[in-house]
Image (cartoon, rainbow, N blue to C red; front, side):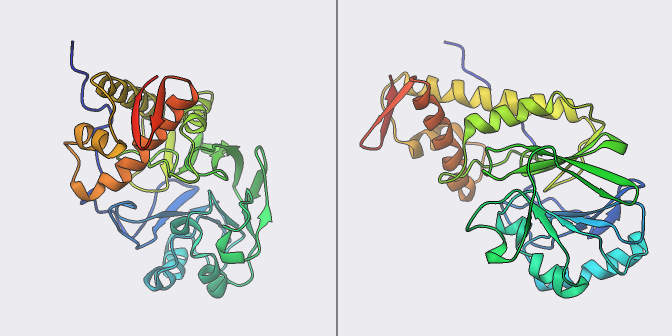
Length: 291
């Protein structure tokens, strides 16, 4: 039997550094959330979008104190801005929405727009609900919301029509691959969301973590191929007999630091749940086997 390749997406955010803030295009500038970790890479990317002196802010980081000091400095230098128009959010994971209260404390009672996730939205802070296809306009820019569940049930990407740019939150990262959380993720939905992006005319992807992606279609296709390969690898491992999910992780992720195996386990379990839903595998007392 021919052994499958180890992976399609081979880059990583481990050890990556990025500028604290920078201008990326006439309409887009980024400010790093200053919350580095093994799972956020250099930190969460937050974005000023628009051409005026009151840009909108996409995502707010985790709310660390240093970000609150950096944000107004970056707004003034990058956008000549002392005020913001509105906050727009990709999803309710804390490293993207945790700074909402902090940003409001700096810039006043801004509206915060997102698809609702009851019980998860900014610790109960008020949000203004939006759904798929909503258009948010600010001076010089219009963002169209695209519902892309899988990483999170409320996940929205945003398409900047003037630049054929897509803000992908955690759906597509600048390096490495995203985790599908055990409790609230859904790999089947995630794959559908990736394929939905292929219908867009894209020049660049601005991810929630890591650098901008200048070959967007190739990156999306690599993400799809990577997950399809993982699925084949899991089935291949189960051909020898039943295994626990953590045993599959140990066998498949030999090129990944052990401290990331817990996150890898979440993704493996998401694959197993998808395969079980398709009738291809079964689980009994924590052991997975081919159906």
